[in-house]
Image 1 (spheres, rainbow, N blue to C red):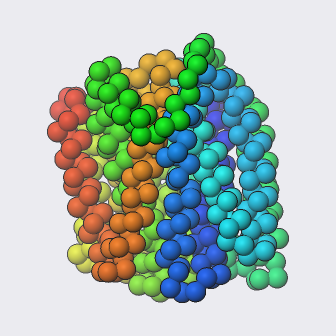
Image 2 (tube, one colour):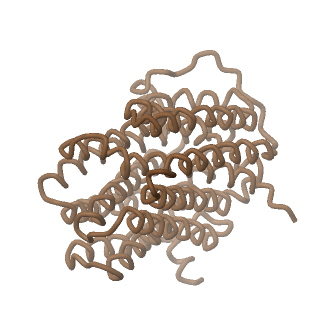
Length: 409
């Protein structure tokens, strides 16, 4: 029997691939277009330009997800992605950092509008009973997109200069066109669109309104949003730190750094998928403290023992696998507890807070790494993770019941 959700999974994978291919190419290639003193600035700006659209336009993305046909909107976004990749290709070809930053801003803008659509479409296509496994699989394809995009960037960086741009251009065009083809295959039974007249464009007022709405109508949503935001802050810190730690401390090439980043993405994606399989028809919030404890232990082991080689790779992959385990229940909780078209708005609210935290992570990384080195960043990750898991464990209802169910499996 054909999996009705497969076109959505593939569309999501290909967009995430493009995001990470472009961001990683900036970190691997564009940093050499500026003096050494500005390399960390370029890396921070790459993160900033990618997440800024989520901060500025997430309210409008949530508004459109309630007002428009979601499947048709996805097709429009994937068509625009082809034009965006052409801008990025031109930037790399001419070594123009401004065009490259414009490209990453635009692809971030497309991701902003796509994110609330993809999670709402999981339920529209598969029904509420598919929320956990569907969300877990979307998360898996997301991190596999990170995996392939990052690894591809490392490989493209080490290609002979005479052929590098041809391969970069071909990769961007092939992925963006393929994404449009998969989007056209999406079929969904969507609830009736809401009649809305005012588009919320002020993201500060939007945050205040949605925070109050969540407190009054979806108890526990703000706690889940905070947990997911702390997760993305921690994940962003790890990703940025690996670019520096692998090259400067482990002394490996861009290609091998890309492979390690890809292995991390595999582990997170696998953890997300396994989390969905374990949960089945439940939302197993008990995986939050269980997976979180293992994650914290792995990260603190890296800081304490400062390993190299296989030991480092094994610990960072274990941390990534357990991160996937405790992240997916938070997304699934949102799927089940936010009903109807309001889900798209809740996801947009969540994205907005997530990416504010990711933007903050760029500042934390820059300060910590420049003052104390890449090893200290792992300590910061560990301490922030303790805060995240403690807050979630104390404030999320059903933790004890879920743990009891999990221990019986």
